[in-house]
Amino acid sequence: MTGRLIIASNRIAAPGAPRAGGLAVALADALAERGGGVWFGWSGEVLERETRGVRLFAENNIDFALADLTQAEYDGYYLGYANRALWPVFHYRTDLAHFDEADFAAYEAVNRRFARLLAQFIRPDDIVWVHDYHFLLMGAELRASGWEGRIGFFLHIPFPAPEVFASLPQHHRLARSLCSFDLVGFQTERDTANFRRYLVEQLGAQLLDDGTIQVADRSLRADTFSIGVDPDDIARAAESDEARSAAGRLGRITENRALVIGVDRMDYSKGLPQRMEAFGRMLDDHAELHGGVSFLQIAPPSREAVDAYQDLRQQLDQLAGRINADYADLDWMPIRYLARSYSRDALAGLYRLSRAGIVTPLYDGMNLVAKEFVAAQTADDPGVLVLSEFAGAADQLTAALLVNPHDIAASADAIYRALTMPLEERVERWQDMIRSVRDQDIGWWRRSFLAALDAAVVPA
Ligand code: ADQ
Image (cartoon, rainbow, N blue to C red; front, side):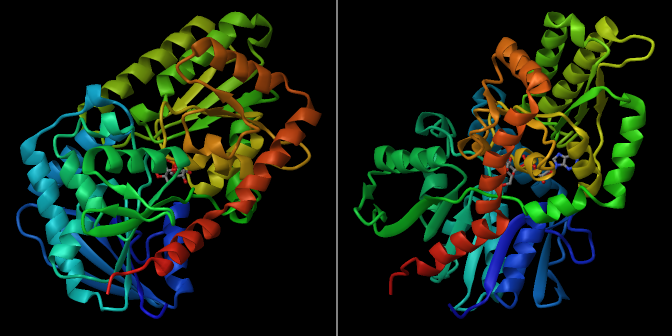
């Protein structure tokens, strides 16, 4: 392994900006660990017509290469194909998907333009690591531009069952492009198995004994690399001044009531209405808890230009309003629903304060909030995690209270169980979960992916 690491992702953590997300820090660390490299992606800027070519910034050993999007590209590639077609289909919401040829053309054009920009500054011994569903065509486009070196791809969201993936009119194109990579990584064994089955059934792939997949004249590997968090960093964040201050502010309002917390981007995949209904159902069933428990849901709006997201916002406003109207009293508000984001440190403080974390997506690649919640707890008085069986994290956090988020009654029972669980059982379950969070942390994720990519055999 000699060359530089080149990372391509739709959004990048620009130099100088705070690296809020664990993923941004992890990728910056991956570049630093290899002694430098390039992080290439969208600058986050949308220009009316013309773009400015790649702008380069250096920070320590990392070169950041930023490309802009035009308004038409942003509409078609980002809002259109990525977020109105790929995101819903990959999360099993074909009912919300818009299949628009013009959007696909924009998606293809941006993948092609970005691949050509990238091809200008990669050197033969570099390795390239492409991220997520925005860049499914990057493999084919990089090969078309003449690049023969190693390229790996990691999908952060689920890879759906082949029958569902095949609802995308361009599924063959997308899958063939994925076969242009040397290594394709997924969050869970189920995702990897779905991809392999698709390749066998639709593209006539052969699965060889050594794990290689042979598709026409290409061979690649597909494997599972479950993304993790940095548990020590989160534990430190939970002790920070900001964490204490956030917990103090909230604690003054909730007083000695048990706190249940949910933290999500406002997205229809996260199961937010079902979760509020489950909390309401628990209040229906347990009058003894009235006045004694508060549910805090933090959910900053995202992708507001997409209709389905506006509908969700309305639905949540109504549900929270209804449940509060039914149950609130002069000195008690059952649901506090905040449509804004908080810093990592503040969130860690709120997780630590909470008796239960509810992470109940209808479908989710991994869900880092589940792992962050576990990492923020203390060993002597840990909170309980209520986790959807359809989050990738459920494969590892088997000691959580696992629920089917569509089953409102069962979810309500799980919240009740979390709130009334004896200390001994809470500690036992937490010990089990924190072990897995520590064993497969964010460093393990990036090192195991890069080791597998380094080991990938590149045809001479
Ligand atoms: P997301 O869908 O964004 O990510 P998730 O993994 O839960 O989902 O969250 C990513 C990060 O955003 C977490 O670090 C979390 O702390 C932060 N975050 C979430 N809500 C927040 C809020 N209200 N305020 C501030 N910060 C908040 C995609 C996939 C996931 C996959 C990740 C990483 O959809 O399945 O786990 O990528 O691969």
